[in-house]
Length: 350
Image (tube, rainbow, N blue to C red; front, side, top):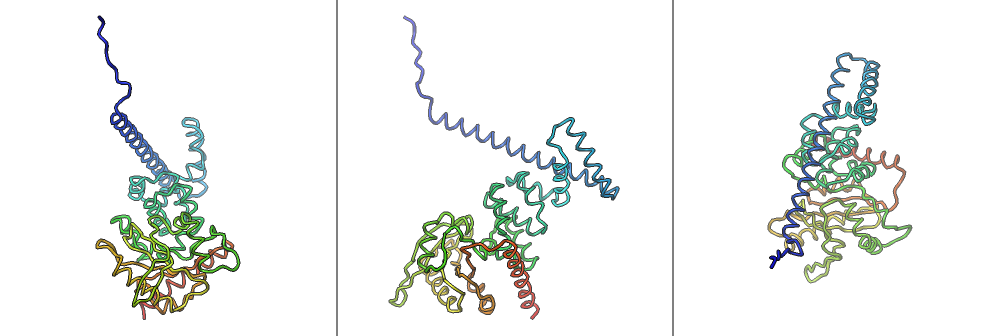
């Protein structure tokens, strides 16, 4: 009798899983290798063109070089090496050091990310977007949205002296240390809530919870919702915090209080009470002290400056339920940055 060979009907699930892991790891390795090689190639091409143009120190000569070079490369390698691509290469070499390029690609930034960032005018702004892009794993589309939404200008860090901005970005890059001033922003854009005309604090809170995912996206990556109307019993009296979040990277509870109208000095004492209670009753051993965010429809900059809220771990920010004209917003943010830097300098010199 012919011997029957028994063949398993189903391949071992573990075997399938192991093979899938191997394939995905290989694909990831190939993609990363190709990305690194491509970014370095573009940077080196730009560096070589740059050195040739600099030796002659003539703008017209530079244009001729790029045009002729593009024509010759297209014959051999196709339309991908057009004049526009060569100008991108040239810009990357002018803006980025080889060390920064290598650091960026090792941490998963692609050519399209860098191409978007390298046309920003301010060096610190470019460094901010590189590090935050890596930290929060932004797609190129998300990166462009953050730039269009003036994220850098809205962060607390942009209002510090340049030396401190550089220091905090360096700590993020080299020590993976994220500071609160890189996380919190002012103003927050809450147009997605759909609030019009007259509304109450409860309407605002309800709308945020209804659009919680979008609200967290506006807050930034790392925020986790904990509780609404957090109850605190103090001296037999009930106190309720509007919203309680936790930030994984900062390792801190974040207390958010929602206010209509302008900021008032009394809000400071209220938030300090919340933070002290949270520190005593909710903070875990491996966490940093809780931090507070008071969201107001309008800030009172002078009161906020006098109260020195930063010493109490409290941030104050405006929220906008309708976005103003972009030019007006740009002027407002740039003026706020200028004023804050001047105030810090005066405080240090005083």
